[in-house]
Image 1 (tube, rainbow, N blue to C red):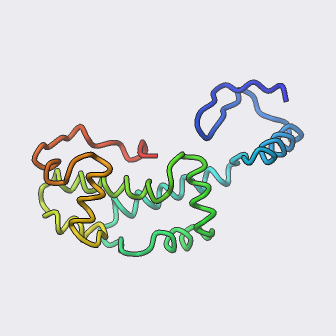
Image 2 (cartoon, rainbow, N blue to C red):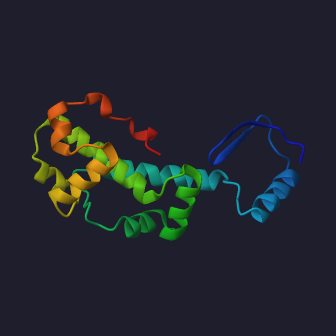
Amino acid sequence: MKVEPDVVYLGGVTLSEGLSKKQQVELDLLLDQNGFERIGDEKSKLLENIKAIVIDNIHHQDHFNLNVKWSDFLAEQLNHDYHYLSTLFSSVTGITLEQYIIKQKIEKVKELLMYDQLSTKEIAFKLGYSSVAHLSAQFKKVTGMTPTVFKQSRQLNQRKSLDSLS
């Protein structure tokens, strides 16, 4: 197509100049033949909405029922089939939607552990874990340490910004 990309990264390409309608159609055809698709504005907005809903409900809603099935909740909120949302999310971010939700929950656990106002059992309940053991196993898998060790070490530099978790 004789189009030079500015930047190529996992899940994306940035072009210095826009494509004509004819070039967009040609690009879409080539991508489709190779098992890919161009993510237009609609899909970008949908991806950002997925992230915003997950972050808002894990980090900013005390009344959110985290025992609800995320697949049902996101499908209902975004008016799309969950499989479509999940496939879109992983194809762009490189991680599954489930992994993203887990990472967000673990960041919330870190925050609550640092505040030291709730017990690990209360945190597990608040974030919809079936038990402290389940929370601890997931926390250790993601961070490499148990919640107790994290709390004792007070490793504040272990926290990440919410938008960098994809």
